[in-house]
Image 1 (spheres, helix red, strand yellow):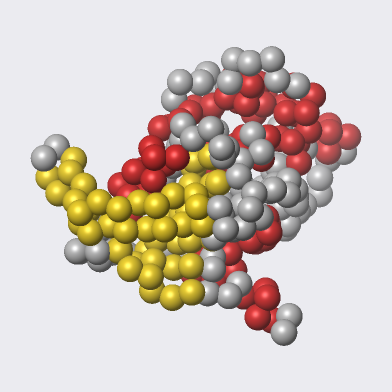
Image 2 (cartoon, helix red, strand yellow):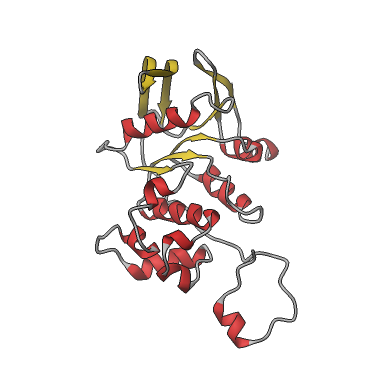
Length: 239
């Protein structure tokens, strides 16, 4: 559904519905971390959930400035691996880690309103929050309303804005473009491509993988292995 600001609706009657979604705007700040800094060295022969082996022979060495995507068949354990990586990194003191889960309620369920989530019960600058959310086309009703009333696409944008405001240096993203509208998706991909920190993600989105990633790993039954090293599409086109 197209989003139209309240002022436009109150100022004049629209003769026709616009055929373009209002543009969104957000960007991450420049990340100042040494390029060769090791973000995670993950190695374990097997990983169990409820005494069932879900992952085997996992070995990943991820340095700063890597944009990595894990691919594989449904049910291969990609989301489990991503959660494992997040658990290993979330309490690190030397880096700021942000997480977008596949199911947003994992991190949103304990918050009542959008502002509750954005402030996280701290004394945050609400003026700055409103500005960031306005750039992502949040209405005043959405800002003050219940998180439960938001669409999945709006929830995805909300979490991304929070990561920007936290000044995250490492992003762990599970299907980050899945619920984003076709018109907003290119903006999200461009922002993530330009992100100068580390991205560790799972995705089936070919455009996202081609434009944002520089490393692709495939998760198979008995191991995770590098499939190929990529060069971002935009860089190839500029040569």
